[in-house]
Amino acid sequence: MTDKTDAISRGATARRLGPDFRWPGGRRVAVVFNVAFEGWSDGKPPGIGPMGNPLPAGAFDTNSLSWGSYGVERGVENLLDVLKRTKTKASVMTSGVFAERAPHHVKRIADEGHEIVPHCWAQDIIPAALTPEQVRADIEKTTQALAQVSGVKPRGWISPRGTPHADSARFLADAGYTWQGDVFDDDKPYVQRFADGKSLTAIPLTMEINDLPHAMRFGRSPRQFIELFDDYVGAVTRGGHHTIMVDVTAHTHVYGRVSGAWAYEAIAEKAAKLGNVWVATRAEIDDHVRKSVG
Image (cartoon, rainbow, N blue to C red; front, side):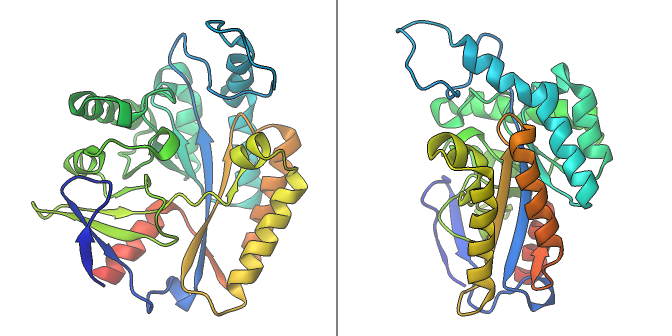
């Protein structure tokens, strides 16, 4: 393991895990189930929706706003029910705005043993487009609101679009976070260290099995979602590959719909039966990496 200057996070060095790193039990593959529970600021619609024809310039996209609202109205309950039936614990990316709009959902997520992962105050807040002061303020506001409702202090953070500010990681470490997921440059975690001795486990958000690009960008079916999991995990568990992690991600407004939730459930059932795969939350991955690295 060697330290290099981090390409994204200002003031951090990155220490990659070596070839001998393994998950618990000597496993080479970890599977993480994620739920994206996303909300938008008042007057801001999602940037994507189901309609293909473009709106006239300046028109408010009422269609995408209604489509995105399915997540809080029905989708989050559908996916939490899936997780309950399959006895699966997930890392749930949660917009801070739901601490005000839907505290009952936030509390249920925590009460059922899932990890709440702050996801900025709202999905339209992109840290890379903010000033450092705004980034720090958003972290503080979002963290406090979700912790107050859930009764649990969050440990990890993922920004909308996975697009942080250069100072986001340092601000998260200052706020007491132990991991962050705004990285895409590895398929296993690594450690970010700062000059003051603080550190974060950088846990990549792998995109290969993610319902939003799968369904909304590429137009693939729920059945293909399952096939992708089977093919990918089958290939990496046959041997010859280094230790990796595989994310299975469902958005409450995409595969939170019944038409897609069944596929998420099928994958959870499959993963539970794979003895050579470690199913874990991101907090559990953070714990294992810190124990392994020291």
